[in-house]
Image (cartoon, helix red, strand yellow):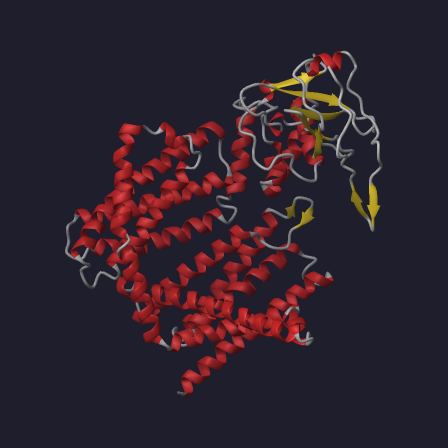
Length: 565
């Protein structure tokens, strides 16, 4: 009883220390105090404070003291590196300095810590480097259910707090609602409540066992359904062909998602391998294991096509890593099923091996070893220099806004290069504060644009892919100064409206708004004829805008005088 009380107090103190640390970092950010002035250090500390204490919460009472200290030290070093490197590699969020490592580093750090810890605890309990697979399965699912319940408990705690505070607020007592909305309360109390939830779930082992059994049973009986769906899909491909699959532009992701779900359901059905599953589930496990190979193959095929067309991107490199993991599971599971052993023990060995592979890939991809941003920048530059993509179609915004310090350094090199066209585009991209387009431009669209006045071309630095024409017909693009600043702006006409891209003083053409005609749009004369006849001009508003407390109100007339034909 005393030991259990000591563990409870220890967990609450860990939660309190975590909360105080997180609030201190938040306060430093708000008040511009140390270490907020050192972005990489701040990112390292915030990620460590957010995740490393979870190792202590799980390990206290479960790991030997020496193992717990070493595991926590390893987790702290890992999160310090992940947080610091995540900020260093991508220090700017558009034009704002970044203090946080980003969602991809945050999520990956959480996954890596979960996997690594559950390789340590069973091995420590068994006093072996590699424990029996049943111990890994038992520990991972127990902690997973415990984590889910603790997160849910914390969420319900906050929901009840807001409900109670709202009840007091409606009778004029605002103390409670104002208190729980403060950063001091939120940052300090939340980790303590989560730590309490972890302990409550930990000491109720029978409850955790019951929830785990129910979840696994429900998931297991979904395996035959998904197996039939995937088998039917794969059997249909020879008759439908793969062209429709590739046209979705998300074929690889769909295949990997299907493979991931099959892997989860296979393990839910097989569990720790100590007992044979129901006969139907056993057949489903064997069939589903063979289905993993074609899914991984299709994902690799789709990825190879995209890389061949457009080169590497960070997303495609991550997809390649996921495809490698899916392929590893496919090989291991097929080998286990092919041996026809009663317990399919090869499934467990495959799971353990792939856990180490996953950690190795994370270590490579989220470090300078194989950073997806760095590899993508190098590949895109290679494509540009080899002429695989033209200077006009090259995605300079990817280098400027989506590839961190590696892309910006490459863009600065292009701006100093000998190719005048590339240099002009690169300089324009460096001057922009926000991207012109939200997505990379995979191919030029200038062939669909009718530039006016005739004989002109789009300004250097204006990406043709920023203008998307509806349908197959070209749309008219007019170069015209609409705000009287002496610089030509770009107007893209389409069906009675014109999107305006105004030339910015610092460079670039951000989308500023749209001109809309209140009159019926006539097909004749054409816009080209109107330009030639000088019948396009900028005019003042008939009624000035109204400014109310700093808010601009625009006058929209009920009717207008339209020209008659």
